[in-house]
Length: 143
Image (tube, rainbow, N blue to C red):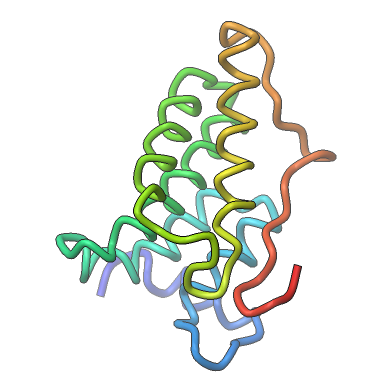
């Protein structure tokens, strides 16, 4: 058990579970939508770490990288955010539009748009604000 486990368990206990989905996976979306990007990253690592060497792990790795990019945006670190968005997009490449209960094209669009905004501003304008932060549809929800 990692030192993060009690904190993560406490966080996850406040979220409603969805049948057919790992509670950490659902927790990622709840944390992300609450702008708890660092926590979203930590929560999903519990799913990714045991399978990280398997090809299917790239989907989770992409979500973790996307959350990490938003952590960097919250801290005004635009260059690292742009690079993580690019890595996330690479990790999403092998997956279809709908994957594991989510519209991955919507997630790809968020990554592309934020990355492009950073590039267009030459890393001088942060495209993220608390008021305009993206919201992800929960797995299994119809958008």
